[in-house]
Image (cartoon, rainbow, N blue to C red; front, side, top):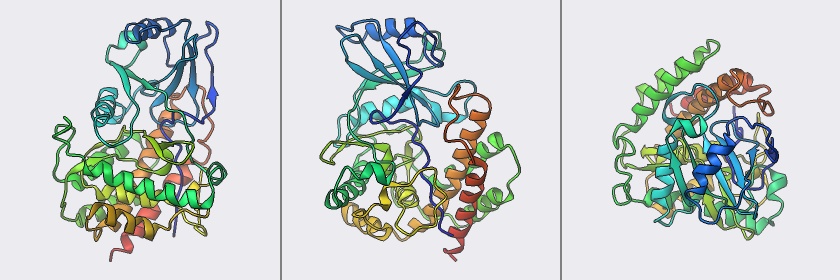
Amino acid sequence: MTLLLSVPPSYALSAMAEEGKDASNEALDGIDRDRVTEWLGDRVGGLETPLTFARISGGRSNLTFSVTDAAGARWALRRPPLGKTLGSAHDMGRESKVISALAETEVPVPRVIGHCDDDSVNGAPFYVMDWVEGPILRSQAEASIFDEQQRSEIGRRVVETLSTIHAVDPDAVGLGDLGKKTDYAARQLHRWQGQWEKSKTDELPVVDEVHRRLAERIPEQRDATIVHGDYRLDNMILTPTGEVAAVVDWELSTLGDPMADVGMLIVYWAEQGDDLIPLIDPATRAPGFQSREQVREIYAGASGRDLSEVDYFVALAYWKLAIILQGVFKRFSAGGYGDAAEGFEGFENVIGGLAEAASDAIDQLD
């Protein structure tokens, strides 16, 4: 079975709908207007109040808000979902640290304005970064703003940018303590099985079975690099000419095996003719984008790395996505996204389908 889905991005800083605008004094879930205004005013010279806040729709993990001052200057604010969260995936300090460190490298990221770990300001830690303007390609319709040749160039840039991320020396940029450098796959299996136990709302034996099978055949880890953790086309903002303006959504970043990012990218890289269970129609199905096999070839050429074990990480990516979506679904059910309900229909079926896809992918390793 070929099952791909395009999970709504945790955030995107432009080209997205805004909901719940706080143009008046009306409350907006996740924002303490007065205290955040005071906090930002201490860090941005010439800030003109009042500020307008708007929830960015589409996010299904950490929450993102646009912040606009009276003069039209704009920023993006990131905070955890409302209510109880699971694990380090919602660690605002970690996420802002990674982006700040990468600002000094060739990896395109937004500039961080500041990080706040004082819950009294906004009810939870948050950070603010520059607003990056440009298209985000989540569907074939959105990809149609570029012609076929441009889409081919964008596809190549996506893969080459991943190689650029993996070429960064974590120690040299102050990220040597971001995570353990060894035993990445084993750590991921332990972490996400634990998340499954905390977030499951029903028994799904295939998730446990895939965990067992993956644990039995962990490949040798050859490298330790920065791992984005959720690398895909719709987690980047482009320029109007198709250059990569910013890679976003670093909430799952750590140190580990770079093949994990390659496997995740392959899972998300839908091809024409795929049997999909999508939440949206993935942009990479549009003519011009490379095949998954070409994605492998481009990455191997750009990085010089051996991809002989990447299929293991394809299976791991399917399994991990099933558990991530289960956590998202549980938070939604508990009100962790406020009144936002769009995009959660049929999540239970998608979670089961992803777990089955992981099992099928392991079968291909035998």
